[in-house]
Length: 415
Image (tube, rainbow, N blue to C red; front, side, top):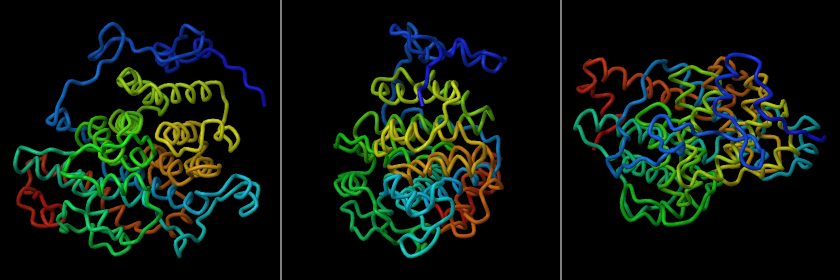
């Protein structure tokens, strides 16, 4: 199929599209591009990086405007996409068709000894959420917290579940590490393992130059606490040292945060997130690919295995985010979008997870097929994490007795 690229300036047909077109113009080569208009902390039309150190703007809270249901949708659908894609992660599209038919995989298939098994993507997502909640409790109780260091501590606990004794000797308290299903290796990425093993102190940036997708795939919970972009970027930077590897994670969390607190369409949230962060040094690769899938979507070009292959396999951060985002933008339903996101020759579980996070936040948990949820490993644990992400901050902010809540402190010790 031959696709003719049309300028977004020719596509405006509604007030909402008019808003989007304010940010979309042609570059010097005549290609449609995002325009950073200089508002909100920009200079000369270029977004400037934040000037913040270890105590940067992590502690600006994301406004809590929705309850646990949408957060549960985000995390459960992400895990379902991870589990659906796990069976075909290392298969080519031709192999997927031979094994599951011309439409590809559509229901959970056995992998890691069961149907609905999650991978390291969802495991690390859960420990990231645990770190965020422990950081919130610590900040609320003591008034001081280095959020990435607390997340790093949580990821070190995940490392323990993978059979590794970290040099940092993380505390083994809290409730999450006691979930025996998490004590299982699910093809963890070498970059994440080596970076966490090599860590000399909590909160230390990775010294590698990796931009693999192991940072972006785990940061969805960062959308719901603190400053989404800053915390997600710093969380990913604990294991991935290339700017694309950690800035793509920040952009993903920022898009999710805008969906959550502003309740706007996904396309709008993506454009506004690019306007805010697309000019940051190191964002160039991610910005170019996200702009490209926005153009494809605006021209009605839908993802399929061959077109997804043209974007890459999703093994690196910007590709995984672009594939997951494109599938979510084009989705006719949550099920349709996640199925599209996993059926290709590439990192199917990570792209399925990203698409699931986006679509689960948009449609809610009721849109997840029952056949997926029935098989999904750790469904109750994921749901509890989602409830806690919504409930614990609300109770603290309401001035309740949360500070003296023994259960909260035992689940998320503020060490």
